[in-house]
Image 1 (cartoon, rainbow, N blue to C red):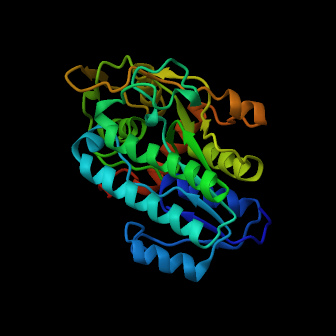
Image 2 (cartoon, rainbow, N blue to C red; image 1 turned 90 degrees about the vertical axis):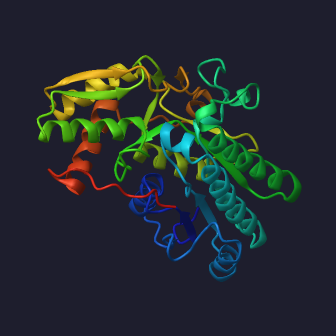
Amino acid sequence: MEKNAKIYVAGHRGMVGSAILRKLKSLGYDNLITRTSKELDLRDQQSVQDFFLEEKPEFVFLAAAKVGGILANNTYRGEFLYENLSIQNNVIHFAHQVKVRKLMFLGSSCIYPKHAPQPLREDALLTGPLEPTNEPYAIAKIAGIKMCESYRQQYGDDFISVMPTNLYGINDNYHPENSHVLPALIRKMHEAKINNQPSVKVWGSGEPLREFLFADDLADACVFLMQHYSETQFINIGVGTDIRIRDLAERIKEIVRYPGALEFDREKPDGTPRKLMDVTRLHTLGWKASTNLDEGIKIAYEDFLSRYGQTPVTPRKNSL
């Protein structure tokens, strides 16, 4: 990508999109296009077509999506399927129509079968049943991968897909019901600390293993791959190591300086027992994550405090 190339970052107000935008700006890219969800509803076909015909971007990072944790995925199943299919179908198709030079579609590690061998290799896709609690979201993301593959094969479009592991970082979502586990724990423990609560409940047994990637590391990987990767096969982005939710909660407890106890609610679902990405292909290309988990959690908590201070978090909707 040339420094003056016209680049559209879809979903620039979300955690991932904003990290990509920061990375591009830090590298000197200055011809960046963004639209808020109020300015451009990516679910609306006509609006997206008009946008692409008017702007004609050369490169597209498709980071816009409706996202959430286990509860949100399992509750709003129809919305997660319909809205994500609509967003990606519109953006990918009209990027093709205006002959975008390259597009990157960001998927999710939930595309893999619930009991796929660990660590998760790219060739494990569609080899078994999905985790039921987030199946609609996963199916939408799988459709996005296959759409990029199909447009590459039929039309020769340089559309690539990347599969990030679990993410956290600056500008994360701290909604009490719709957030992912790491930001949810930061919020819970912070509010328990300022309200002098004796304990914090953690969903599930605490035994599942999860991998966590700092969002700014993901952005660095995305820009790297946009510059150096052009294949039909999607590629995993992760750190290559995982941690028990119980141990993660203890680390957050220490960083937030919450003095109370942790209670694990075994009546709540654990989700997939383990989800660790095989990042061999990414490492072979020459990219590795640089932010360790403790450092990343500290940065995320500082960002949380800068946005919400000492007051309880006001829930916000997931932005497109």
